Length: 373
Ligand SMILES: Cc1ncc(COP(=O)(O)O)c(C=O)c1O
Image 1 (cartoon, rainbow, N blue to C red):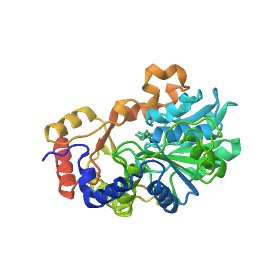
Image 2 (image 1 turned 90 degrees about the vertical axis):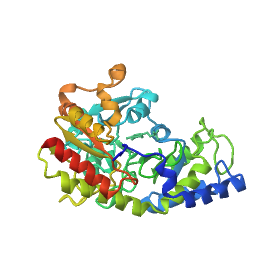
Image 3 (image 1 turned 180 degrees about the horizontal axis):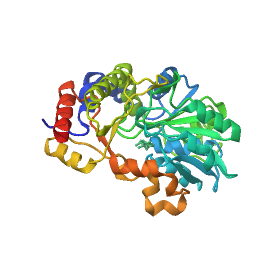
Image 4 (image 1 turned 90 degrees about the horizontal axis):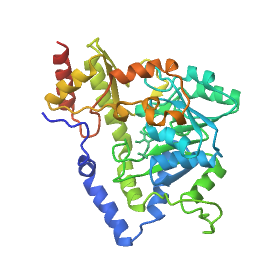
């Protein structure tokens, strides 16, 4: 078998008829920028997540930057975030002159909420959890800490559309949340895309303006400095067509994760992510990624590769604090990041996406079993 880590060509094949129709409709109308499909998509996501406002933007990094900007983050402000996240989370702070303060992760690979208070200083303004791998942090505990210290929560929910904690969607817990629509995401478009979710009218208004050259959508008059980071209407049409199937998509990803967990839990050398049927029912995960930990990571990876199975190490193998080129612009203490240090010696992601069949999951598990025998 040949199972690449991801099949980008499958994204079109999966819903070809729906997508062809959606694209043709937009092209026939010549409706490219800030048109009906974008408004319909924003409304569909608002209904689905329970967010009052959804603002489609050019990518998930711009959505992070804009929500920080709309919350008034200034140079020198500190933003607490996990080190196990994409560089874009830290970029959002760094781009505004703020300082990413990096903390450790837990065994489920998400930010260790119990480490937040020790990182708070008089300069701290924001706590920014990453809802990693399609799983949502312990947001009730995080909220308590934020309230106690008067801090804003902004969520990097790039990987977690539809993931829930205590029945509430990722991206709707904080003052605002950011989601990426990059092609490989659980809901991905055919290029770059992102969105901000918020219940706050002022933040929403400012982001609606900032994404479109600072123009107020109601008056079309420039009322603040802005940039151009609108979600394309063609992308919105693709997203709407795919979103019709989203509940099935989430369900299928959970099935694949369950299949991996059942089979691989018999191998003691492997540390698995929490399974969909895990005893901790506060979480409902959408499995953007299936990230395992293994001591012999590189050997296993090579063995799987030799057997036609592609795997990936998240962020090119470096947590944010390990990006030495940027270390002077961030604050962290490696001795407090020991779980993350260990994780990056052992983490490996197995193929989990809509193109992966049950037979392929079984084959991957068979090969992993053979490796450990
Ligand atoms: C955790 C996280 N944050 C931010 C981003 C940035 O999103 P984008 O690639 O759409 O800019 C990504 C996507 O790759 C991500 O996984």
